Image 1 (cartoon, helix red, strand yellow):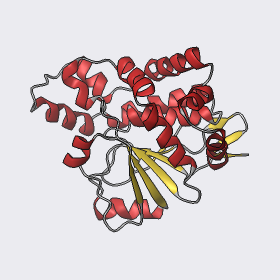
Image 2 (cartoon, rainbow, N blue to C red):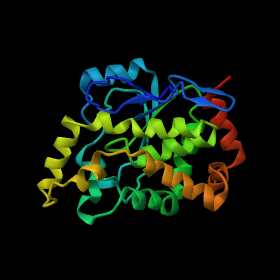
Image 3 (cartoon, rainbow, N blue to C red):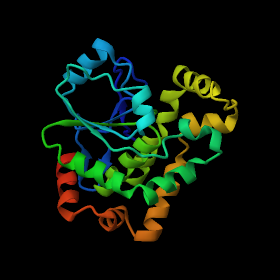
Image 4 (spheres, rainbow, N blue to C red):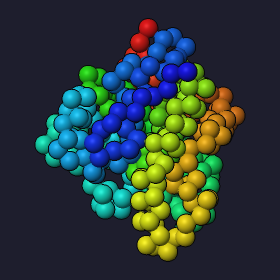
Amino acid sequence: MKTSTRIPVPGTYNFRDVGGLPALTGRVREGVLFRSDGLHRLGEAGRAELRRLGVGRVIDLRDDNEASLMPDDLDGLDVEVLRLPVFEGGGASQGARGISLDALYHRIVTQHTSVVVGALREIAGARDQSVVVHCTAGKDRTGVVVALALSAVGVHRDAVVEDYARTEANLAGEWLEGMVELVGRYGVPDSPELRVLMGGSPPEAIEGVLDDVERTYGSTRDYLLAAGLELSDLAALERLLIAD
């Protein structure tokens, strides 16, 4: 099955185009919605690649501490940056708390509905701008927001899950080892559980949160409407993302 394509943007490990995923009424357009890990290492080469891709809007889901420590390297680019912080952070910032991915994702869809709605509204309003949604790993906060966006416009469930699951391979190696070392400086010991939390993207994690949403609300669309998204926003999102 077609899954999102990793684009080797210098300074990133998990920059992907979700274009091409199959949906009920067509496929996701290519070059419209990108997802990524942090953009703080771009350098001139990375910025040139974002310019080539036509990126005009960046949605940053990191908390204030993360954004301060690792500011996006976007100087000189004609981009609109929208900060929509999820204060629970991602797996890396939860390493010392023993939280599971299931619990983290449940918090995102129950305690940060305004962020989810805001992100989808900003994607829907991008028009002729390409959008990048990112956090630190491009896995947890980004993974949930992108999965909900794709589900809301009718992307097949198995494609949404497979797209999420691809992240783990992209983060393995240099990125994960660097993050394990970083949190180790703050007294968080290395462990298999920590590595799953920080770099893992098991299919059952995203399946679980989608199941929770559908069990409670009936569908992703109904969840988003209950959270404050408008029907016009959903229609705009579908027009933007889905090609016949």
